[in-house]
Amino acid sequence: MQIAIIGLGGIGASIGLAYQHAALGDRVVGYDVDADAVQGALESGAIDEPCDSIEACANADMIVVATPPRAVPELFQHLAPHLRPETVMTDVVSVKQPVLAWAQQYLPYSNRFVGGHPIAGTERHGYQAARADLFQGAPWVLTPTPDTDADAIAQVEHLIRAVRAIPMRMDAVQHDHEFALLSFVPHCLAFSLAALHKENPTQMQGGGSWRSATRVAQSDPALWTDLLLLNREATVEWLDALIERLRAVQQALQHEDAKQLRALLQPRSDWYNQC
Image 1: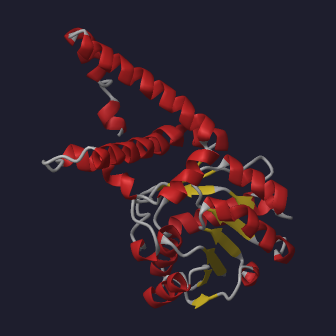
Image 2 (image 1 turned 180 degrees about the horizontal axis):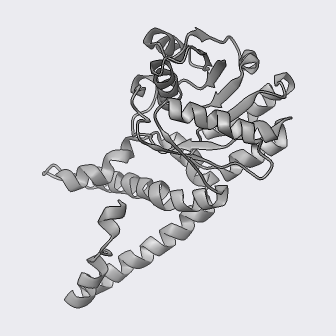
């Protein structure tokens, strides 16, 4: 089997490295608009051979789309005339409803597309951030529709297990709503805290809590602008809920209400086990 990875940044190149590490004997090819990323993926062993165009990737048995989300609609349109009915496609974009809509709109065999999202990203980006162990033990969400071929799902799940991740299926709407809380809001907070510190420099360096809270502020702002806009409704809903809680904390402080403050700061007893 031949797998084509389109987009050889941190996630795409890591898929190639992890799959090659599985030593299944399949061939992995790749394409990226950045020549340095292609060369880096080739030299690191993430791919066996580069493709000279997006269209050339259509010859593969499976295509993994690992580009920024803003590139996906045009990429689908480039691939569409060249796809074979048996080719399986998947992606790694962390918001699923728009990608599924683009697949339905642009792909001739949308039943062979399986929306996917590995929950394994880091604040680092670019091919230099690729790691063969990035997905080990990580959940990898798939968002098939009622029309998605069972065979296509099975092939993508085989890929996921080969890179040592754990496939799980979820409705795209539920995925986008939950991930807005689990990742999109934390990114908003991290970017905001980093900006606040830049505007108000401190003599002290932050400790562990500061580093934990701001780590993902090193993420690519252009990527996160696109993601937040694509998942804006769910993100706004969670931000509203968070702002309401922060205002309650503020009011408890203003009124020196220790009982209310303690209640607001007390997590559920099972929260730590879930996280």
